[in-house]
Length: 169
Image (cartoon, rainbow, N blue to C red):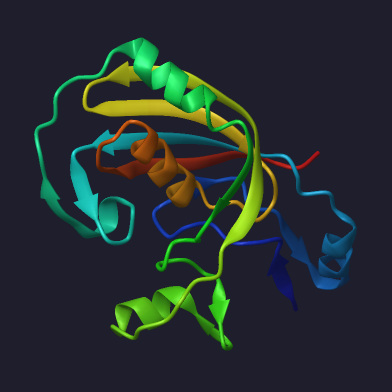
């Protein structure tokens, strides 16, 4: 009769999403949904307003980075981060989803949030693709954290893959 879920995943993402049925949806408030773990692939040189592969506008050929540069930039993400969520996100702005407002071309401002990166690990770097695992607090936006990584590398890019591996305990 009733089905509910514990949160949202980006439309292009895949992976773990907790689902409850019937009266069990009332139990979500008791769940500790931190730590969330993701596997992400960052495509260096791709430009996209949505910060993912759904709206790629252009692709630049960029110089290759050293593996050490990438590992150092990833390691520097650990700890508390303050950033704006993506405008193409499920975050509500005056009762409406930000992605709907963005697709309609409306101007609005996203308030900064704070989240924590507990752990980040390079899985593979095969230029122009960086694949990494990241564990974060609930309410984190991996697309925005990927943009912080790009700033640290002084380059551009977008996520081409996102999978939630784990949600809480």
